[in-house]
Amino acid sequence: MIEAFAAAFTDTVPAIAVIFLIVMASIVMARRGFITQTQIDGLSAATVNLLLPCLIFAKVVEHFDPTSQPGWWALPIAGIVIALVGTGLGAVAFLGQLPDKLDMLPLAGMQNAGYLVLPVGLALYPAQFDTFAVYVFLFVLGFNPILWGLGKILVTGNHGQKPQLRDLLTPPLVANLVGIGVALSGAGRVLPAPILDAIDLVGTAAVPVATVVLGAVLGGISVSFRSHLGDAARTIAVKFLALPLIVVVVLQMVELHASNPLLAEFFVIEAASAPAVGLVLQVRTYGGNEQRVGTVMFLSYAACTLALPACVAVWRLIAQ
Image (cartoon, rainbow, N blue to C red; front, side):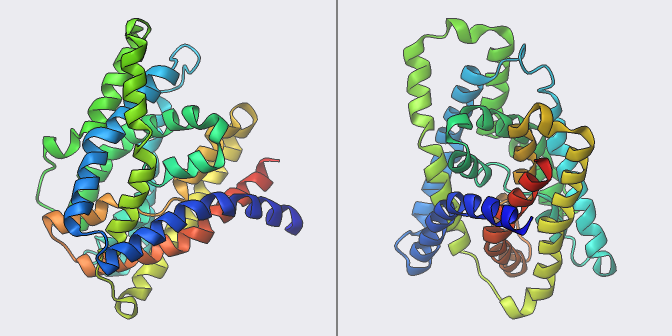
């Protein structure tokens, strides 16, 4: 068993390492000023407003087939459930320090469902990436409203503030809804191929640019390891132990790996992904304890470099 785990872990690490090398290089460049805040904001805006919507629309229209995926609606529901379960586990971990540590709950329960999972999927499943990407986009359809609604309220401390429609109705969400509408209606068959190819071409830049943005955002975070190590330890325990364990148990119960091994492994990756970078952006935009959130976020991504491959390796052993 040890040898099998080591083999699965070794197979997974190189794929994850490529992503984190880009992230670390971006962190260093942001820290040294080679990537300025203005450039980070520009890259982030281009990714959110253009590249990611193009990638989502093209992949959904080309590869989402409702007739062959009759249970597709379960993926948005899964996005909601995993986010709420993880946040609930975070509440248990910080039970004695609430409400002072409410900002730690979304860090424990709301993962980087797109920016990190997409490049991981591209590295691990290059031949199946189109299908994997559709899983991601359907999952975030349910996940994103939780992240930008409940997540924003908890991480910023604006507990009396209602989520604004403009925060939930993002360009990626609109592209997702339009793409699903086109796929369900069959309109994709009459869409001119050059137009869809052009959209797809622009979308191919989304994953590498988003990876650079992820590292650059982390590089701009203010951290204090000594002050927030305990918070990070509990968050990491929930994020990379408790939540993945629950997901693995559920997957075993429903035996999803027997019918759709790629989808089963997708859920494991989502559960073991590092916290959503959007939480840092929310704190920087709307207020909150930036140093505590930033420190826990930074340490969580460092832990993810080993935790994510370990979770995938464990799952592959269990699913054999």
